[in-house]
Length: 142
Image (cartoon, rainbow, N blue to C red):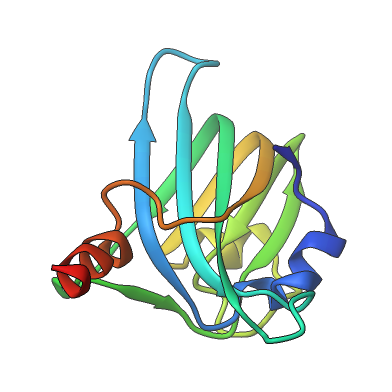
């Protein structure tokens, strides 16, 4: 895992049109709170424009909001994410509607954001355990 960076986000087009595969919340006594979001997204470094699984690991979560109005199996991050630094925290706004320059009040008014002391990212080569894509792969192979 490495810290989130503009270079990483540009490589994956700020997760534009990425599919949220899995969200894990481990909310414990501070500073142990952690949220992990796994997205399936297009890799700009891949000559064939292949899709990869990116793990976004929020450590020391201070605040978050995850709201989903309809029951669905997949959620798409339309128009990518925004990153805001505020009061020593890193906020990722998964519902920025393509507006990448956001204020903290705009982030907090959205449906899906996480603010944490540290945000790390990594790339998986296979579908994560328990993801919709892994279940689909197993079904297709059967």
